[in-house]
Length: 177
Image (cartoon, rainbow, N blue to C red):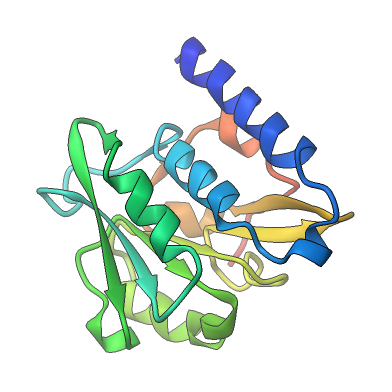
């Protein structure tokens, strides 16, 4: 875990330090993708998590899809290949380990939380306020830099164990949904 911890620190430095004028450039989903992959090293899924490939779902069209597919082509999670699934509607969502909600679909968070209920799925979003509403990890733009928030209550509801090493790098930690 020490090697993974050092790698994560490097990724945090890269993620936070290499960003200049984020607002002018728009969202660079390559950074999000690096973090999403590294989150898998600090979160433990229960035995009842979906078998087979490690599935990362994306709701609707998003700029993150291609960077995720590029990452999935070269990486694995605990020896499992990574599969990226695009869901056009909340009703289609099933059997995923992670679910990414782009900004334009953030209004669907409550429906997604209801659909996934106690399933072992890490919900990731990218709009201010969504961690407080139950997203497990939420990317936020603060002081011109991308950061992330963690909702520990959400991870517990989904039977996920989140490492305190990851929690300590969060810009903000919520303990209630």
